[in-house]
Length: 155
Image (cartoon, rainbow, N blue to C red; front, side, top):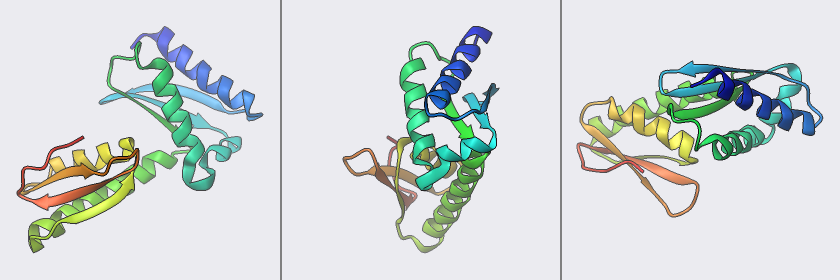
């Protein structure tokens, strides 16, 4: 990813925050499978209200605006490390449910989840032996089923 694209993505997030009347510091850093945009500053708590619905909306917006230019994987928008801690919690839940599915032979479910969260679950389950995962549902929010040694696919 070019420095120009990083600057424009950070500037876009800052502009959205400014339009909301919020002053924050924004930084872009490359991560293993894409780019992480971090928002710092106490005023950023506004994005975390109502189960971080504002942060989810901002991430969706950033992805929509820069999807064509950003070819280095996913764009993750985080605020005050909220998403980082929630992602790790979701990974641990997926690993626990995968182990439970493998041990009991019963399908486990987690959700409903947005596409970003489903991706985290699918990646965590893919690393667990003897289980597979699939998304079920026909809306934006879907449930992930974790099954023992099946042939379920990812969405």
